[in-house]
Length: 308
Ligand SMILES: C[S@@+](CC[C@H](N)C(=O)[O-])C[C@H]1O[C@@H](n2cnc3c(N)ncnc32)[C@H](O)[C@@H]1O
Image (tube, rainbow, N blue to C red):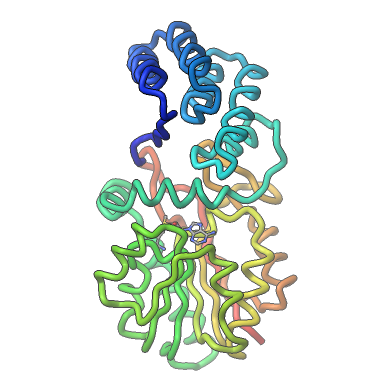
């Protein structure tokens, strides 16, 4: 994962105390670290990184209510919530499950971009694009249509791994991603006719009706709690017979969960219903894992849906 985000308080002494607190936290002296963070916060009450770290330390100390209070302060100090304090609040059961703060996703992937491919492909055995490719070929073969697409949209395109997998089958790729640093990397590949830094639903809203033959989202819906808005827009943007293919992480139960790894897991029933409710027709839903964690495959699904 990327290095932890640090947002300076603008006060040198407060920033120094934060640094010392982090050292103490890493050495395991959590009580002293929390104390130093409170001193930093006294100097700079709007110090989001200190509030967020204090929340994490209080969690480590088993002080749930105090952790919730610190995370709430972190959100007040940085309303864009680049640390993702709302996600910690969701995990603590103090907030309803909702979409990730876009600024958190952007900050995380901007930091991650330089080492993204090594970390994901080499360390976590990432195979999302290859799984999507096979699933799309099978879905096309099943309806006796060639797997060739004039225009494809890659949602959460990252550095461009999905476009690389589909390069021979797609005439023109449009990439959409929240992270400018990931988009910079995608641009270097030369695989995209167009790249847009924006949230995926916003990106689709700007596209015309029936203007894409294929829409892909490889390991991107794991950052989206509610699939309904993106599936609804995808249906509008696809040509009749066009395909939407995406991966999700999943779990044995119903609905959507936020995992400890801060990615959503969508139950199979939930994915089926979201596809149906969007007016798309499910072509394939397979139990396939797109990556490993702790050397074990993370339960996942590969979905392909067609616009009728
Ligand atoms: C794990 S990476 C996968 C990148 C690429 N699809 C691949 O297969 O290598 C997830 C990407 O989705 C982007 N992302 C997450 N949520 C998004 C959203 N709501 N709108 C646009 N991009 C999003 C992130 O910025 C990140 O680049």
